[in-house]
Image 1 (tube, helix red, strand yellow):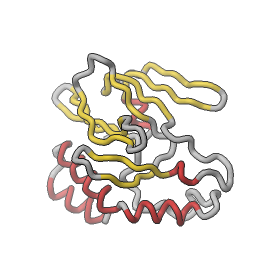
Image 2 (tube, rainbow, N blue to C red):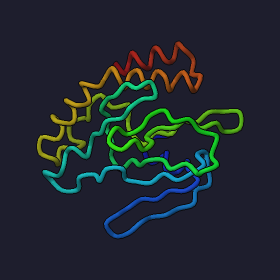
Image 3 (cartoon, rainbow, N blue to C red):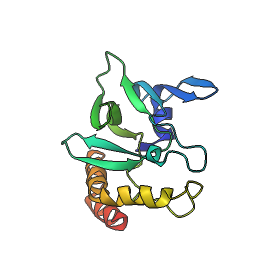
Length: 173
């Protein structure tokens, strides 16, 4: 399971847009046959910045939707002939790919551009943004069950031991 920056490193190619230009890299892992391009949303960089750019909604493959934390995560562009992946989630705003499952040799890798693991952002992490913790945490709490179910499905796809899933999801909840 590779999240956020891990998704960039696990793709064949990554593009990261900065105000100064684009960082473009050919990657060595190549678990995902394509490009991860980001950031999907521009993170706020100044106090009182656009808090909305810390959360976004995704749609899981079963059609359920919920809010997730994002900070610099990208979206996936598969190569035309790529066949080793399954789309698990898309961004609601434009249907671009947010989370993929990749078959690699005899194993499975899940790449996520968003953070499903956060129920709330710990105090101080985004405190430089006025009222950000309250607004972001409210949206995350409202989608806690959604993210919990997504994580459970990811663990199942990775064939992680049921006892470990139960204890991890219980700790998460």
